[in-house]
Image (cartoon, rainbow, N blue to C red; front, side, top):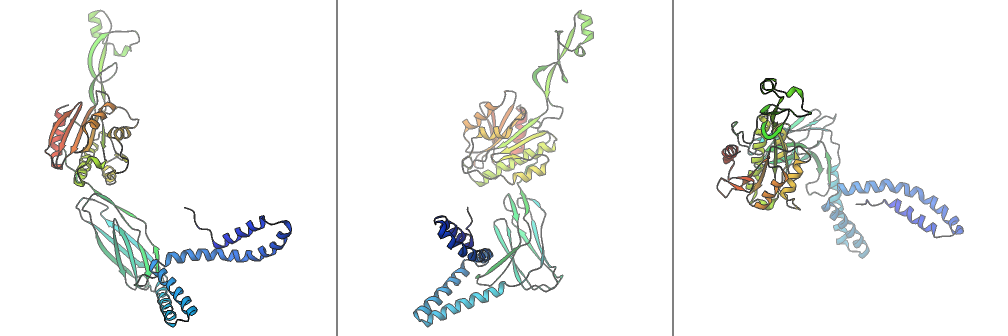
Length: 438
């Protein structure tokens, strides 16, 4: 959006355009006028800046009163109508009185604190607003505004002497998972009618993470949490840890793999073969398309399931890559994953197919050993089955379906094992059942 040009710049541009249309004789006549106007143009620039500041200070009610006063005075004097002149003078006096409330210097040191900075849904979070007059003169009473999430808190500050401190405590609602931003704290000076409003910002925004509820998973649920040594696969390799069999020596084989005792007994060189072991890597993805969920409760259940599995896998010191439609989730530690889960929101505009969401989460990483997809009860089965085509047959693909109106259970959709949960209490038993089926 282009900013309006100051009045001085517009006037100078008109003169320049006018000069270009004139001949050389006419220009000689215009040049003295242009030189005379240049000081006026230079003086108009700061006036334009002051005008923009005045528009920010005077809100819509004050502008209505200002233009009403001007209109009444002009019409009253023009029509010789004393009632209009009186009304205009009254409105002008009211505006001047309102300006007097906005005059004054504020010398504050403002601190906004949230304790704790991370809570679970339904937990208790308290905030503290501390204002200190760090000037040498008393500060008149004023009002402090503090946005907290979608709410808007207001605090009345009394007259503060030099070095005097005023403190206010407030509670932050945590009835739903969210990333709540508190601040910035803004002091407001003005009249009670809102004709003039002078604001000044004192603090930055502070984040409060309201984590989703999570379920404690059993450590024995190793179906989705592989051990650190890795799991043996069906792939045969010449160098690994899990011994498979012996085979005759072939040209190019490393001599360090020769099994000398068997070679001496059979009379020919025999080398060892191994089963390839892979480090466990879980790809954990959630589809956030709002059309796949029956309601907000079901969506929150899916987020809780994602956070429960992810934090448990990280606590077991296994590799996990987590993501959703909005991008990757940080999974360095359980706290970072829970923090990022607060940012997950339903996608309503141009949602991506589940296959594309999982592909985006996987990126260019190596083939994962386990893929888990968290979806809603309305997610189409063909879309879930299509995700399995992204990975090799060695990859275990499971899906957790949040279905608050259904019954917990397990079924197969092609190569995919789908576990339905109606509440977070069903998740630990479903994870154990998924592990026993691998």
